[in-house]
Structure formats: C-alpha cells, structure tokens
Image 1 (cartoon, rainbow, N blue to C red):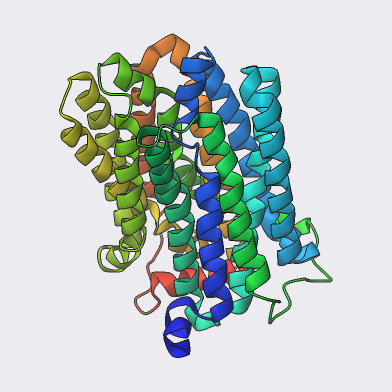
Image 2: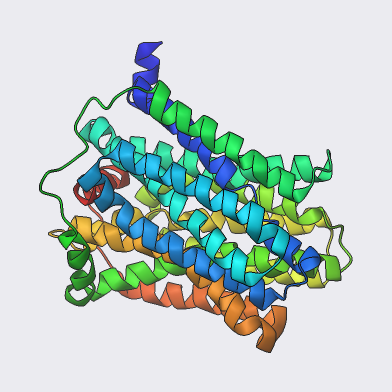
Length: 422
C-alpha cells in the first residue's frame, strides 16, 4: 500500500494534504455558481452590482495569489495555510451575519472580499509544501494532482453539493453557506493536523519580497511573458463571469431555475478531466498549437454557441453538451505552464509568478467586464466581448512562440519552473 501511495501521491503526507485541499476548496466553492443569481433575485441587486461584488472579490484573490508563495517562504507553509483558514472563518462570519442578511453592498463587498484573501493562502500555500516534499523527478505529476484536486473541489464537489442541497433537500441558501465551515474545517484538519509535521524545511531565512519586483520587471525585459500572462487572464475570465448573468438569462428564457447548476456542474467536471489530458496532447501536437487553436479559438466559438443555444431555446441537453465542450477547451490552456518558463529560461520563477498572477486576475477581469458593460450592451454584448477576447488571445499566441524541447516533457519543464518559483 505504501508503494502505491508513493507512486500516486508522492508521499503519505501529501496524500492527506491533497484530500485536505479537495475538501477545503469544496467548501470555498459552494456559492460560486449560484450566489450572483441569489443576490439579484432576493437582494434586488442589478447585474452590475453583483458584478462589482465579484470584481472586488477577484482583486483580493489576485493579490492573495501573488503574495502566497513569498509569505510561505518567509513565515512557513503551515502558518500561511493556517492564516488562510482563519481569514476564511472571519470573512464567512462577517459575511453571513452582516453581509448576506443586509443585502447591502456596503456590508457584502468588504466581508466577501476577506474570503477572497483566504483560500489562495491555504491552497497555494500547500502548493509550496508540494514543491518541498515531492522529489524533483515527480514534481510535475505532484503539481498536476494538486490542480486536479483543487478544481475538483471548488467546481465539481462544491457545485454538486449545492445543487443537491438547494434543489433536492430545499435547504435555505444562508444555511447552506454555513455548512461551508464544516468542509473547510475538515479539510484543514486533514491537511494540517493528520498529515503531521513537515519533513523538509519550507521556511527560508533569506526570503524577501524582492522576488515580487523581479516578477514585475520581467514584463519589460520579456514582452512575450506579458503576453502569456494576458492570455492566462483571458483563459477563465468568461467562466467566472457567466454566473453573474447566465442564470438570470436562463430564467428569462423560460428555463427551469435549477438548470444552471446542472449545466455548470458538467462544464467543470469535463474541465477537471481534461486538465489531466491536454498536457499529454500538447506533447504530441505542440504546446502553442493546443493553447491557440483548442484553448483560444475553441473557447471563443463555444462561448458564442453557448449563448446562442440559450437564446434560441435549445434543449437542456444541447446547452449542457455545448457547455461541456467549452469546459474541455477551457482546459486546453494547461500547456501555458510549460510555455511560460521557456520564454524566460534565466527567469523561470518570475515567469511563473506572472502566470499565477494572471490566473488570479482572471477572477477580477471576468467580473469586471460584466460590471462595466452589462448595463450598456446587455447580455449579448458581454458574450461578444468574451468571444472577442478569446480571439485576441489567439492572436497573442501567434507571437508567444517557443521552441518545444524534443526530450523534455511538459511535466519536466513545469516542474523546474514551479520549483524555482516557489
């Protein structure tokens, strides 16, 4: 059994940590796909107002993502993960006691923003732990398992559990959010308590915030890295923006109010599966080809088809299939993790920091587009913007050219880059 665990999860400690992250992120993602529609329906907020809530939330996610790795180096992984847990408790308590019941932006925005600071510290803090615990030759696989658990928790288990509780057992929305504390507590206990102490030091006496400055100057030294960061920001921006206005659109087009959670569940389930596959496909077809044609162009086409299927009153099955294909293409951006460090071979860590920051900014950018444009161009206009951005990303990928090594795999290159970044 021990040999099986070592082959799959690298070590027993990481196995428990992975499952801890899976459960923690399931609690963190409970409201991801239904809270905007709830605030619009019961809080009488506009789409722009709910978009503003998530815009600020996304900004906090981006900031926390940027700092999580450096904080883990300075203060230690377990301490940073614990800080993330405490911030989640504080943010959840304030949000559920004062924010949600008030239906007021003045309470919801700051309290929900605290929650945005929380999960990157816990989840990305564990990623630093993976970098120290996993052998160099297995780090690529170890990180791949992390993202599989991360996405599976926030997008599949969290969404599926919400759908079950809201639509089958008819639980109150506020009560459902309180149960998130059970998930995050259980996840933290598994990841931090049951796994025991770190076998290797994850704290540096010489670490400082100077690395952040290097992550900024590389944007000037290596413009292609900046382009790659923009592509990563565009990657999931539409997926994060959809929950702000698509649920209301489905209801306006006379679909059952429960359809959205079912559709988005399958979208992210397919996405999680293909997160593991596109890296392998990229080795065969070429990293840039996969990102440009399947990721950028594929997402652009399916984003438009998704909206068109809804407004043309297609069957729920058709809408679900299109959303699932979109989820598949959404995962085709995975080879960016190999492309980015190859663009700056002498500054691989800084290049990866731009990639991670782009991932965090994707939250902010996706919601910001809805906030800024929904009142002026309506649902169709927002969809056209998202579609156009994917094609802009495809054009950028033309210039993000990199010579793909013939011997080194995607996992190997990503392993070296992430090891240096963390």
